[in-house]
Image (tube, rainbow over all chains, first blue to last red; front, side, top):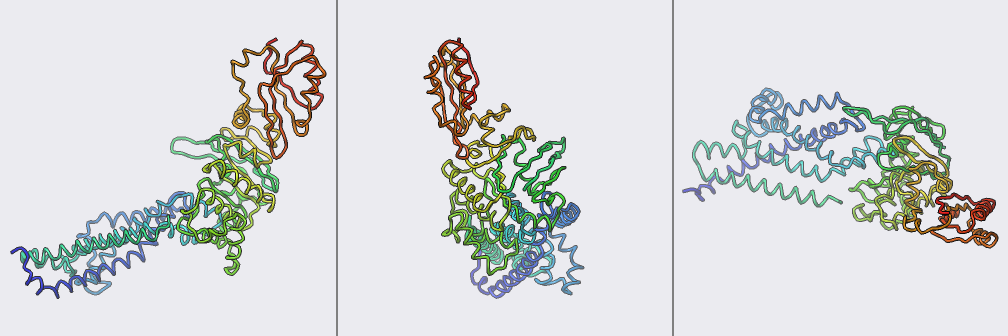
Length: 223
Length: 337
């Protein structure tokens, strides 16, 4: 039988636990990537050529680090970061441990998306605020962030969706969550029911997040 | 007073240097409306942006009331910019902030105490006639209304100079006129110096006191708008003026003429006197009007007529001499006799 409903119901507590773990690791990674990635994205933008904090040195270094992390395949990053994970959370197993490498992967990803979102703002609007005599900090707070608000929401949506995919990968090396369930039951034990259930759950999560993201982005845009 | 002293702006591209502004010197008096005219690429926009150092001049100085802006940096430059308002062709309002918040932004830049901000925002919106739009987002405004918000924002911190970067070029003729009247009123009421750049001579004719024409980064002609309209020196200036006041007589008409074709220029009050009818009565000549207009530049009449004068060469010469003694300027364009 392809899908055993009774088996699915009996596994519900496990699925629910896995779902909670996935939410936990994505939640931590998302928070960290916003807290660090947003300022990083802003710095990447304002240190660019022709902007008010133009600084080739800072821009070059940050850009290099961001590119470097983004060029490492996530599965390898997971393993490479084991020592760091061990240092921070004293373990390399479980959702909290997985959220360390998830965060490290998501920060540069989100930062680049923020940088691109800021790049979409009409340079004239930034120039007009310079002409008005605004301080750089005011320009960031009252021009860049509000003008990019909608695109930043889209960037968060995209980051969450990428984190869902990454979290499933983290599950394969002991991170827990939906991915872990899919590997242990669906792959190692040929348990189609769990395999299908996890895939459906992942599809639903991604759809819901994308829809919600689009809706919010549209609702807050005043253009 | 605004002094632009020997300003040059060179743009460095990968392959070559492009000279945007080439050794330009201008003096613009307090309370004056000064127009910079030129085709796109003439360097007028670069020059305007050099005034508030949105672009730093490669060499030369910008003196605003005695302070050399090119010597300022960072915080000092920012403070100097509070006193130089600027409006743009595409308005450049913050799209995610309401009209009120856009103006508030300028006031916050000048660190106005928050308890005074709302009153000032209302005062500024009243000045541009948009009080009821305070909570509206820019996307819901028409072009003319957006520019009014731009003007209110530019005036927020009582600047001494207002820079207008093609401020009416994106607007329809009727809206253009209403924005120009608003600018003129602001100029009179607040005694604010206005420097505007445009490629439309109508704009200059409507509100400018003095003007200059730019070509290839250089100022090729400068003077009062009236004098330049009356007597343009450079071919390019002539070209711009003929976009407003055209005197092209069709070839077919010129072929038909039998006498002398003269262009008669009446300046100021002279335009109102009956010089032509006096001339025709006193001398044995006949006159046919081929073209004519009276332009009001800054409310001063400038009459330009093109006539065919018929009669004996001697009589025509006497008639021309007479017209000139009455204060008009005569130029013979064509002689078929």
